[in-house]
Length: 125
View 1: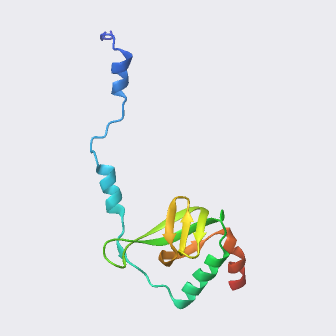
View 2 (view 1 turned 180 degrees about the vertical axis):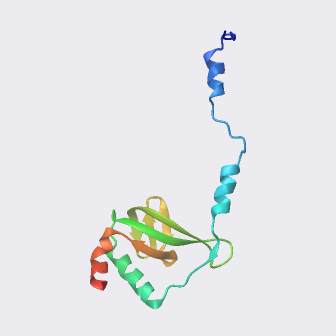
View 3 (view 1 turned 120 degrees about the horizontal axis):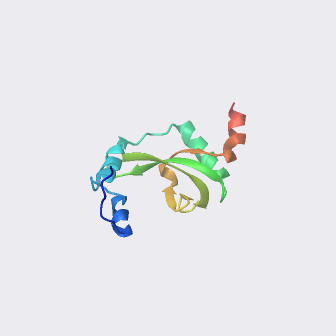
């Protein structure tokens, strides 16, 4: 025989299924721990020339994947981040590339990938 429980209001019943964060701040702490702080890598002269050539080929709305160096407090210490999206702006005077809302100094770019560079890759092969 089943035991009868008193009727529970919908509001009280909903509380049972509400999200619960037993460890507040745990996810943020994990994300911080996942950061890989590294020294900045120096590009070879050949890699720098290739990067300059790619920067000249970019047009607004080109879809790119950019790996760039995000510097922290100490010079040349930080982490490498990757962003993929359409080019919002390329300011050759200020030397910045903007992907969505992220503005990246071109001096911090480590690599560029995208369909716009396919012809360049075929020539090198």
